[in-house]
Image (cartoon, rainbow, N blue to C red; front, side, top):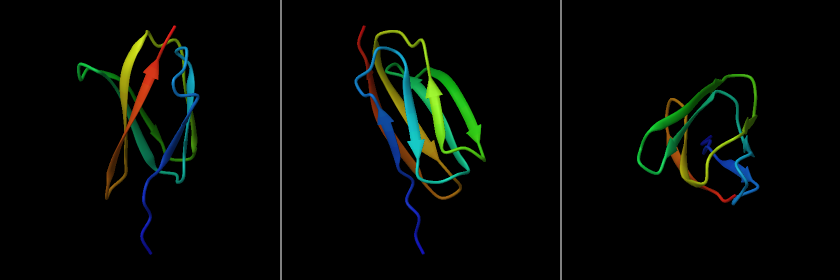
Length: 79
């Protein structure tokens, strides 16, 4: 039984605040700037819903990972 990590980001593009909803628990979320700087790390064993706020205008990359896989998502912030 294969489980593939998926994350729905809404809204995207956004004004600096957005929500990420994952399809499973035990997912680590790492948010990076377009230059590769780590902005935030969330280790959420219990939750499938994660919120981010007050991000500056720009492009970000969200890395979703568990013990077996890594998925990248692009996020655009426009103010």
